[in-house]
Structure formats: structure tokens, C-alpha cells
Image 1 (cartoon, rainbow, N blue to C red):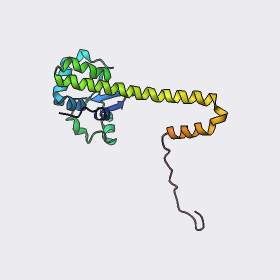
Image 2 (tube, one colour):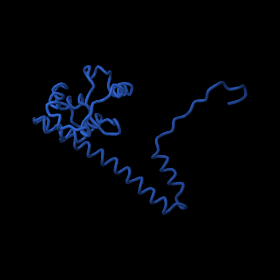
Image 3 (cartoon, rainbow, N blue to C red):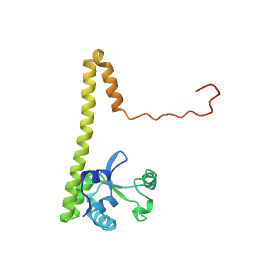
Image 4 (cartoon, rainbow, N blue to C red):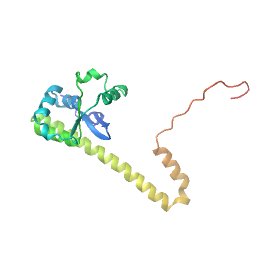
Length: 170
């Protein structure tokens, strides 16, 4: 039985074309079916999958996934370009993959998408509250707010100096 933990499912949710999606190969793995079986079921029910539910990746997007080490090699997809399913597309899969396993997988995936939405919303809510407090207590707590903002910001990459040091200089 495949791992249906939130962490495992979350690791399979990718951001492609500014949308959170899951790839057909990853979904097939979770559903414990071959990718071609999943793709055949989708093709038989293609009217259920409009462009905002599912789309096929471009070769350049697959190359990007390889370069980011998301997938080991483009052959991972068996020679064809994979489908990417949005949250609505994954929900639609439950209607065409009719098994107990499909039901369990879809419940776990929906919970994961809900958790991700909650995390994103809470981060935005925290930023909004911080901004409100900053305006209210700006002069009194400016140093504290600057420190908090630094902690929330991604770390800056250090630039390496190019060239040689002259004698006597550091």
C-alpha cells in the first residue's frame, strides 16, 4: 500500500503555470495503478476534464522538472508528455476511478490541498496583522518589526568577490 501521508502527498503537488497540480505518474502511483491505465480512463472521459481541470505538460516544462530534480529523467513518463491535474481535476478522477483505493487516495489528496490553502491563508493573515500592528505602533516598535520582517524574508544569497586581493588589503 502506498504512503498516503499528508507529507508524501504534499511533496507531489507542484506549481506549474502558476497552478498547484499533481502529475499523472504521481497520481497513478498513489492510486496503485499503471500510468497508462489512469490515462486511458481520463481519455475515455475527456469531457470531464476541461483545461482548468487538466492539461498536458510541454516538453520544456518536463525539462524544467528534470533540471530541478523533481523527476529523475524525462523517460520517467514513459516517452509521452504527462498530464497535470489541478485540484478540481483530481476530484474528478474520483468519479472515473471507481475503487476503494481511489476513494481513500482522493480523500487524502483533498485534505492535503485544504491544508496547503490554510497554510497560505494563515501566512497572508499573519503578514496583514503584522502590517496593521506596524502602522499602529510604528514609532515604538520599529526595531522589533524590522527584525520580524527579516526573519520572514528568505535568506539573501552572498555574492562572492571576483579577483585577487592586493598585498596588505583584506
